[in-house]
Length: 505
Image 1 (tube, rainbow, N blue to C red):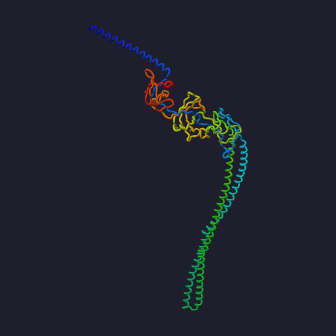
Image 2: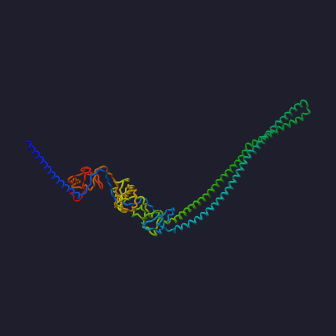
Image 3: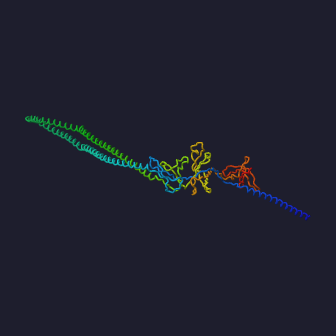
């Protein structure tokens, strides 16, 4: 029984080993077939890995490289308001390489030479007129000095007369009149005393010595007449004093004060007249000097212009005829020998090759998608391996027609993109491929846009699996020219085949 059980077990083991071997052969053959199919698929397809990360949505457009700064070549506007036209008698060829100091333009100086001679003659005449005016000023000053001196003398004399009268004559006259009154009054007192004595003597004589009465009566009469005479003298002296105080002195003072006032007014009038004459002559001199300064400045300008009628290159570079700030259709006629140009007119430019910008004509339908400050990637078609960074620095405020005179032509917004990249191979005028980064898609699943294809209104991707490639429906989000966002249908790390025409049917 035990031996039979052992044989059954060995038979089962061998059967299991045989089955496992058969299964292994089948699996090995199938894996080989799948491996050969995968290898054949890999020879037909390129694959990309589904990644999580960032990508940029960019607006791609062509532009032209230009220098940020141009050395503008123009005749210096030094002739003020005269604004003479300039005739070109020599000029450098357009787009010539020049060195600092090389001749760019030479202009005719015939008109300036004629004007220079005319100004020299006018300046000489004006300088002669100035000398005559200065002589007139000296004569006016001398006349003013004499007139004012006489007026001062008259004022001084009137003031001295008034002062002398107030301080001396009037006081002396008043004192004399007052003394006369006082003397008369003293005389009256004396005569009255003598009359009283005579009357007393007459009374005594009438009682004691009648023989003397006639004599004494005559004495009394004489004394009475003397008193009357003295009284008349007092009245006269008092009247003289009163007349002096009330009439003579005020009238004399008024006359002297009026004389002083008249002298003061005469002096003031002479001072004003002298000042007016002086100002008049000085203004004439100032006008002459101003005209002389103006003429001298014009002479200096003309001399400087004659020296600057040869315009030389301010730096090394390539000289380009025309104004770089104007479009080609708005440039003036071609410059040549004999062309007439204006002072201050931009004739040519030499770009500064140290800093660049890219000028782009942005179609108006894309205007709402960009703003200043957006980052841009710049590639030169002439230098394929050069990639530069830049930012949108300027967007025109208004759109303009591509063809200015044709209002039906498409409208564009001139845009400038600044870059700090410096490379000796860069030259103004190069065509640049510009990618303006309008949006940065961050931390999303994304695949190359070639990995996605459409069929019957649905979106698919071809996903590489362990046993081959399967088509899988996916949901996409935002996309750029290179990548597309995957919302569902793929997992990070999966491999997807890049789309080839003819395989997705």
